[in-house]
Image (cartoon, rainbow, N blue to C red; front, top):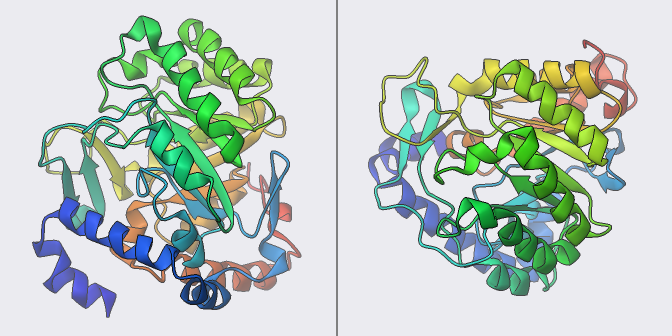
Length: 348
C-alpha cells in the first residue's frame, strides 16, 4: 500500500514539502498520548533477545533512526512509537539558521537514494532544549553541528555552547563534523583539529556519552586516526558514516550529500576497518545504505553494536522499523542466538 502511495503520489510531490508535512503529522501524534501508547504497544520491539547495551544505556533493539529526519527534536516520541530502538535528533546548531536555498532535497528512486544539501536548517539549540525537556519515550540521542556563520576558528566554542544546553537532556550526544553541506565542516575531521574540539565538548557534556560521526569519504588512514583519537579521549563511540559526496553508481550530479543504497559498500567497509582497529574498546554505530534486515544483520556481524537508517524509511514507509525488528527476531532464533549481543562481531 505504501509503495503504491509513494509511486503515485509522494514521488511526484516536492520531497521537502512531504517531509515537513510528515513531521507536522508526527508532532500531532507526539501530543496525543493515548494514540502514541497504542502505536508503541503495537509497533515497538518487545523481544528481549533484541535488547542491547551500549555506552551504559539499555536499548530495546539495535536498530534506530539516524539524524536528519527530526532536525528540531519536534517528534521524537512519535518516532519511538513507530518502533525505532532509538531516535537521533538533529543536526542542531547553537544558533537558529535557515539552511541552504531550496530546492535542496532530491529523491533518486531508481537508485533507492536521496541527495540533500539542507545545510543544518534548524531552530537552534535553545528551541530544541525546550522540546527535549518535555515528556519523551525511548532512547533519544542529540546530534550537534557548527553554525554556518560561525568562523572555523570559533567552531569549538560553538559546539560547546550547544553541548551545554543539550547534553543534560540527551541520552547520548553526537559531534557531527562530517556533513558535506556546511563549508569547511569536514576539515574539522583532521585529527589535530578534532582533538581539542572533542575534548572541549566532552568536558561540556559531562556524564552524557559522547560520540563522533565521520564521513565515508575519509581516507583509510584518516579513519584509523579518528578511531585512535576516540579511544585516546575515552569517547563512547563512533558513528560511521554520514552522507557521501561521491556520485559513483548514480546518474544525478546535484550537489549535496548522497545517502541510501549507493553508500552501502563504503559504509560497511569503514565499519569493518573501525572494528579491526578499535573493536571492543568503544561502541560502533553503523549507518549508510541500510535497507532491510539483511543489512542490519550484516552490520551486526561486522562489529556494529547499533545500526541506524533513514533513507530506508522514505522508501519503506512507517512500518519499516516494525518489519525489520520482526524479521530480526526470527533470524536470531533460526541461527540459534539467544541475544543480539551474541551476533556482534561474529564475522569480523
